[in-house]
Length: 237
Image 1 (cartoon, one colour):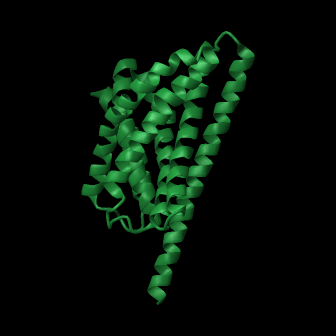
Image 2 (spheres, rainbow, N blue to C red; image 1 turned 180 degrees about the vertical axis):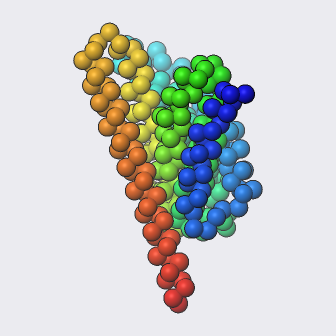
Image 3 (cartoon, rainbow, N blue to C red; image 1 turned 45 degrees about the vertical axis):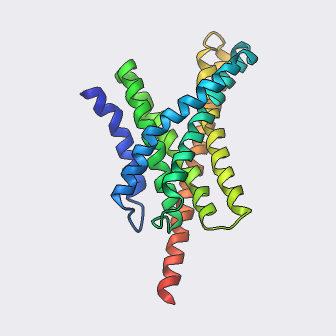
């Protein structure tokens, strides 16, 4: 029971942080649908990953193997799966009527995925894994969702060709940050006997996490300010 709480609690906290910032709260049924869709997206991810994993023979050595695992077996399948679920559940919904809404729904989908992943890893690894994932993995998935949702909303409120560009940019940014994060951790685990490289990788990880948090907070502020401005202009008309 304690491990289950430890798995779920950080997800709930991050979701609440995102939800409570919304000026016009999204309907709970659609939020739950997005969360459950995110849970289901892990199946889509595994299907894509099972195909891309066959390319591992083309990536020999610790460096290339870490790149393959981080991007082709994790970041690309997972973010494509999340994006697919987000698009089919939310894109045509009239509830997506403010810029911040895209961030809210994307984070709910992303953390639905993280919730399933968290339960699996924590029950396998115990409380130490729960703490590590609460500090790094869960906020990471949430912030990947923020980036994807930011551009998802921009696409929703623009016409082609900008629409396609924004959708693609959100997906690519989520993949790059996710893959970079996973790569640094994976390569770190295979470089324990090289203290200099280990320190450099730790510095790289710290830089990436700071960059991710700064970008995520900036994107949230921009959409909240834009919605507030649009709301004020609407009231003044």
